[in-house]
Image (tube, rainbow, N blue to C red; front, side):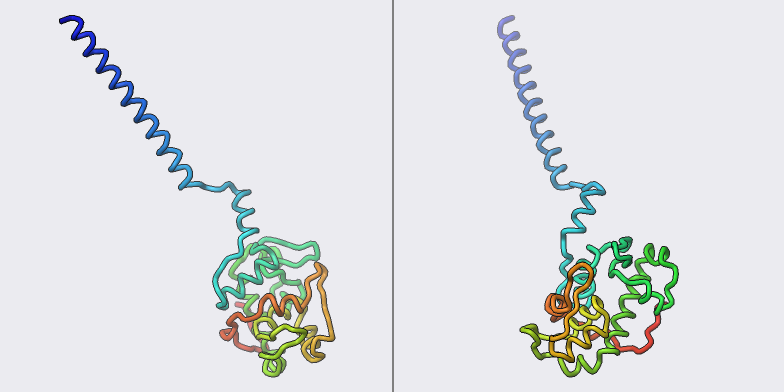
Length: 207
């Protein structure tokens, strides 16, 4: 009788230990799964992700803006280049002063102001280049199909005067910025976006 009780107790303890060990493994597995699903990147990892992932928003105007922003600054509002260009879209101070933006430090910490300035510059360039847009869109220059968005992107890079000269000379006139980016690259890279919502304006205001 004593032997039977002893073996029953041993069997019970064995089952308990086996159950506990099994549950412990399950808990460990669950924790690992949660860690994999709920991964939270560090600040440095977030910066790396932002600088290497092109936001995909199609060929809409938002797509146009974000594609240019990624090319110019990696999409960062707070950046200043070695040539002194500022913000997400890399504005020069002279361009900003044209829109009565005089406080550069305030500009760098104000995303809404930067977005408004980008829209204003697009509106101004569309007005300055309205004749070239009408004449050249749909044609090919140096093997590149000319589109309105490509023209506006090239104007953002090189200024409206340089892209106007490029179009008028059918690609004979060239321009490359301090980082080696060319108007032709911008014409091709940013072609085909829908920029119809941009209104040509001779004197756009930034609120």
